[in-house]
Image 1: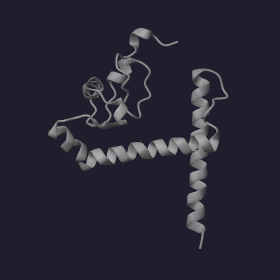
Image 2 (image 1 turned 30 degrees about the vertical axis):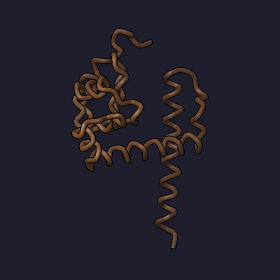
Image 3 (image 1 turned 45 degrees about the vertical axis):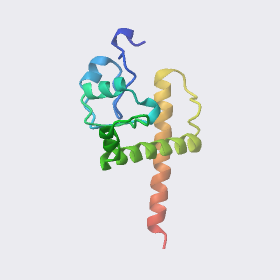
Image 4 (image 1 turned 135 degrees about the vertical axis):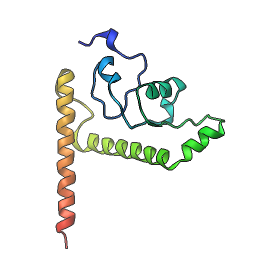
Length: 137
């Protein structure tokens, strides 16, 4: 069981981090963090900046600031949003294709095993499709 004192105040966690406590997250530096508009808050954005995230791609739909609107129209911001939505699409396909809606193992370790096996299976399907495209006349 995790130590509740080591948990973060903010739910923010940069993409690609696998740490479980605040001390290891404090050492994590992500170049990019993206989320949908429902996740936006000044507190979450400040938490990301405090952890060393260089580019934060969380849209704020209710902003009146011209500076913020300009920031959200920049190429890196739009590309970050496209990358995030592409990831969500792949996750959705993997859930449907490989039965990842329900974990059949128990506990935290079992969940990691189930998701890992689903990702490997999806990668094998995608590799097979790519090879099939290359060899097709």
